[in-house]
Length: 268
Image: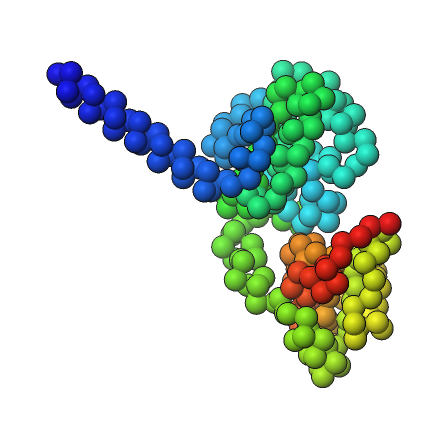
C-alpha cells in the first residue's frame, strides 16, 4: 500500500511539473513579472458572467475600436493618468476584480498594467495575458469587431498567415512602391521622430488617426496600391481591419516598421 501511495505521489509530482512547464512555454513573459497575478480565460469568463470583474483594455484607441470584449473599459496604459483612472474604476466597482488585457501572450501591456496597479496599492488586479485573441475565439458573441458583434471568428479575424502575407521586407517594399506607382504612407505620429526612410523621403505623412478618419473612411485611392508603414510594425495589424472593412484590397505593410530600417525608435 505504501509503495502504491509513493507511486501516486511521484506521478502527481511529475504531472504538476509538466503542467508548470507547459504554462511557462505558453506564457513566456510570466517569468519576468513574478509578482503579477494572472487570470485564465475560463476564470475570467466565470467572473464576467457572475459580475465579479471589470475587464480593462490597456491598448491604444485604434486597437480598442478594432476589437474588444463587450462591456470592456478602455484605459490606455500610455495615459499619464492611468493609475488615477484605475483608482476611479475600483471606487466605482467595489469588491470587483480588475482584469487588464492587451494583444495576447507576446504583449506585455497587461503585465505592466497589473504590476503598476499592484505597486500603487490596488491588490485585486490581474493580467489576462491570453488577451483579446483567445477571448475573441472562445467568446465571439461577447466580442465587438469594429462595433459589431463577432459572428464567425474563423472568417472575420485576420489570421497570422494572412497578415504576414501583406508584410514586405524593406528592399521589396521600396522597389514595389516605385514600380507599381503606389502611394507610400507614413502613419507615424508627431512624437515618433526616427526620421525618413532612405528612398521614401516623399512618403505622405499621415498620422494613423488622421489616416483612418480622412483617408480610409472616405475610401480614397482604392484603385492604387498602398504601401504603409508605422513605427515598429504592430499598429498596422489593427489598421488592416479598417482597410478591409472599407473595401481596400491592394495594400502592403513594411515588416518591422520604420524601426527595422533605421534601427532607431527615438521619441520627441
